[in-house]
Length: 457
Image 1 (cartoon, rainbow, N blue to C red):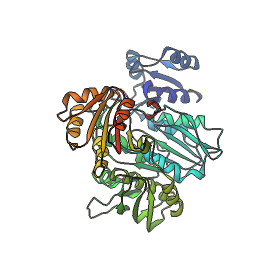
Image 2 (image 1 turned 90 degrees about the vertical axis):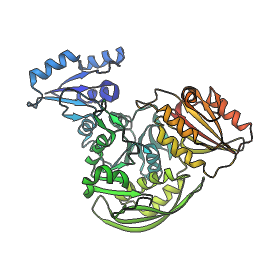
Image 3 (image 1 turned 30 degrees about the horizontal axis):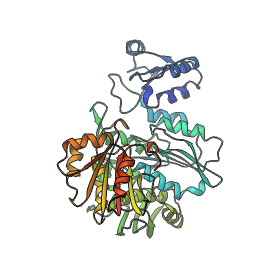
Image 4 (image 1 turned 60 degrees about the horizontal axis):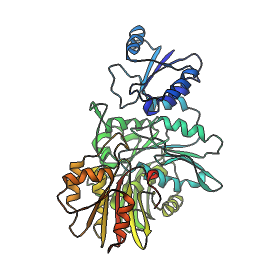
């Protein structure tokens, strides 16, 4: 059998390497974006991988008639638009390659916003099970009751699940919690869709994010925010539990609803109503619980509810869920709080920062006094760039008594469209130092970057 794997940029090399281990398979690779390093290519060729160009792809497909014959399998990312028929996505290939290899519960987390935060909340809830964690912040395990980072600067393409599993084999893993872009692999006992906050275009505008993330419904059971479920996924009602912060008025309320939310920067107290909730073994839960956790703004409530939903699907005791939520202190950068010279700093540092995320971050400033807002960041952090004109309109609406500091590449571009007063400093650390030396009690940093790229302050 012949296999053609398209796209070496988004995890294709890992998938190809795994297929090379299977006897009696010829594995071909098409580096469609021409991004491979020469050394990596030679290494894979020595293992038996055959690299081909567009002309040979046409010949191979013509010879084998990919539309009717099963002896040629084309594997491509769901976001890759091809003129040929794709048989399975990279996500499905990962599911095939790891099927029957992982014998622990698996949670996969996808969505537009909040994925990393949900994974980190689940880290605390399931800490005693020695979880294997894959998030945009790295691969982690527990060693001697402490978190150990096995690899940082890893992507959340589906192939990274293979990499995470391979580098964790010497550890005793009790549960796997994977952050995955654009859907699920079919491996998960529990799939989570955090939200479809923006239904952005993919595959050269031929489809949208909500379609790609539908792959998560290959999971045995799914937790999905109520708004996204009603808009895009209601056909999957039999395997889905929904969650909501109580703001959506509908005849069919969510299975988990937050009520009586009392926000606080250190701890937020929430009452949770659980109604007709379906577990993995088809038990039905009707319960109430009160929790206390880190969720300083309304934007964080759904992340908490997503984590609770996944935990309940796995029939986790309520007390264990409550304890994990109480131990959660936020994610470094996305959203977390710290102090600097007696000033509270709220950090929203995210490589996927977009206009929606900026709006939600600024919503936290409603009751803050003596506030400086620092906005900026880098380009080229993710495939999806930010709309400078739209974000400028959002920043223009910040109250005049709040000082706005723009910084770095993104700040320099945004200031061209801004109508309000601002200060520009070319470095994030300079911006923080400037704000801290003035009459300031709070600093909100909204910065587009990987947190690991920010130098220690």
